[in-house]
Image 1 (cartoon, rainbow, N blue to C red):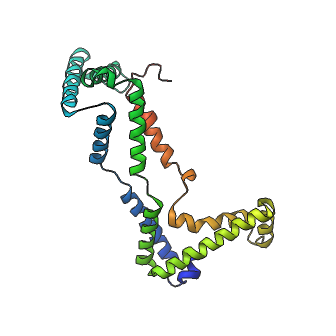
Image 2: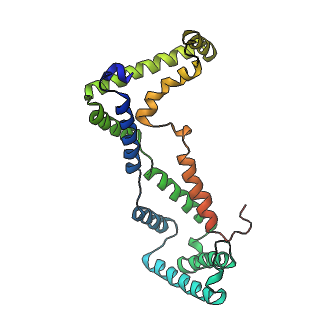
Image 3: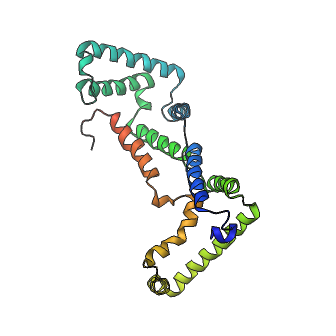
Length: 240
C-alpha cells in the first residue's frame, strides 16, 4: 500500500531497510532510561511509600556499611560469592538496617510489595512509547527517507483505515472460516494463503510497532522487577 500511495520510486527495498533500521534506533533512543532517572524514581517512591527522608537514608547507609564491614571481618573476602553465606547474611542485614533506619512500620511486607509494583509500573511507563509518539517518529522518518508530504501520509492512513474496516466488516459478515476459504481460493496460486492474510497487518506493525499482546518487552520487564530483583533482596529461604 505504501508503494501505491507514496510511489514505487520513493519506497524502494533499500529505503524500506533504512527506514526500519532508523525506526528501531529512534525507538530505542526514545525509550532509553538513564541510571539517574531510575535513581530519582526510586527515591521518590521511597519517600511516598516508606516515608524515607535524606536523614533516614544516610542513617541506613551508615548502618548497612557497618554491618557489612563487620561481616567481612568474620567471613573474609574469599567467601563472598553470589550463593555464599555472606550474601545471604548480607541480605538479612540489609533488611534489618532498613527497618532500623526507616522504621519497622514503614518497611512492612505489604509496603515492600507496593514499592516493587510501583517501581515496575514506573519503569514500564518510562520505557514504553505511546501511540502518538510512535506515529510521530514514523512520520518524521517517512518524510526524511521517502520524501513524502504530510498530505500523502494522511492519505495513506485514510486508505489503510478504510481497508481495515472493510476487512473487519467482511470477516464479521461471512465468518472467519469462510473468509479464509475465499482468500485461499483467490490467492491459491501464491501457495501461502495464510501468509497472505497475515500480510494485511504488516503496514500497521511497520508504522506503529507490535501490539501489546505480541511483545515480550512488558512481561520481561515485569519479571525482572517483580521476580528477579525481588528474589535478590530476600534471604533465598522459602522464597516460593
